[in-house]
Length: 235
Image 1 (tube, one colour):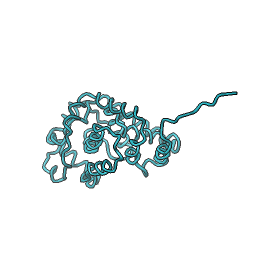
Image 2 (cartoon, helix red, strand yellow; image 1 turned 180 degrees about the vertical axis):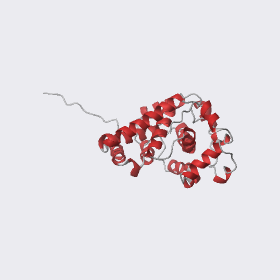
Image 3 (cartoon, rainbow, N blue to C red; image 1 turned 45 degrees about the vertical axis):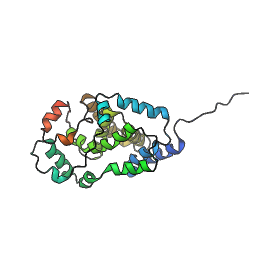
């Protein structure tokens, strides 16, 4: 008589269904809900590995110890910066792309709300902080890398973020998008892979952008910042 091997799934199967819904239509569903829902069912070893990877980044320990969370910038705070500065470029990015609502959004409140509901109980405190700070920095990364907030530009920036942080949110973004072009929209394969690979390569080459208080460097020359951080602008 042959023996039957019992298979124990590693990935929670209810979560896998949510993942597949995101694969069906990544733009409609957005990975954020999936990211927030993962922690309750995540393998503990995966959580531990993500935390270890994050803490191993050069500069991460000081960044995590300080827990820097400034108040969101307002457009009037940026109006006086001269052309060529980070402040001027950042304001232009927000205004030109009609992102004023995003600028005013305090992601911290959403995160605290989810934490109060217990949805993030298994997310380590260091990673809780990093995701809130990461959303504050996202448009700065767009500005410094020169990528537009269109589909291709967002994928390049996702690859850049992932190369520098190996954070689960960006891992999910890449997994969902590559799953979509593999299973639903093969004509998107070249664009998606070119964008991710470009962002990943540029992120690996550059000095980490995530541990700098860019809100305090708005008067600096954007060209000088790019040179200092070895950020290649190809867009």
